Amino acid sequence: SQTIHQWPATLVQPVGSPLSLECTVEGTSNPNLYWYRQAAGRGLQLLFYSVGIGQISSEVPQNLSASRPQDRQFILSSKKLLLSDSGFYLCAWGGQLGAEAFFGQGTRLTVV
Amino acid sequence: GENVEQHPSTLSVQEGDSAVIKCTYSDSASNYFPWYKQELGKGPQLIIDIRSNVGEKKDQRIAVTLNKTAKHFSLHITETQPEDSAVYFCAAQTGGFKTIFGAGTRLFVKA
Image (cartoon, rainbow over all chains, first blue to last red):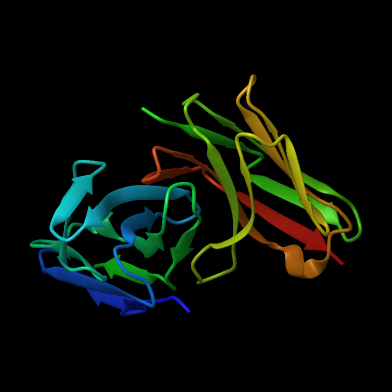
């Protein structure tokens, strides 16, 4: 069966520090991969999606970037965090057209 | 761009009553409409979905309806229980890659 791993679960980082969040998927090949951000009490904002290795689409201009070095690995990064980057970050994978998205457990990032 | 609006943002019901959450979408090409339930500190999980060629779908106490002409879709939960308390998200998918989510509805079921 397919599983998705996302870490760390919680992260507190100072303003200006770098960020690296990692997500891996098991039990499927060539998944569509997604990064979402959820601000406190808000909905899910799509940040990036990827349909294959090295293929990244950005949905909103921001201080973040994403990379997909391997088929089932998706990384969210920042060179210098801002206070506004705080939030709950969710990685998800989806299969074929019209299929549901499966979410990881999320990373709660607090920038101080 | 694509947009999904969801109402209400908060809903409080008595145990055993029904709860209805409504969403509208902007992209007429949307063809897949999932609903997710998110419990505190966890990622959302799919509870029911509907495709554009179907008007209604039911799974035990949960049902979803779709009106493609009006670009509306709704979630209905009957006989609510305290464990139904969570945040519910509607979503619309276009083109197979992007799923756009509503802002969420926080449902409280009072025992």
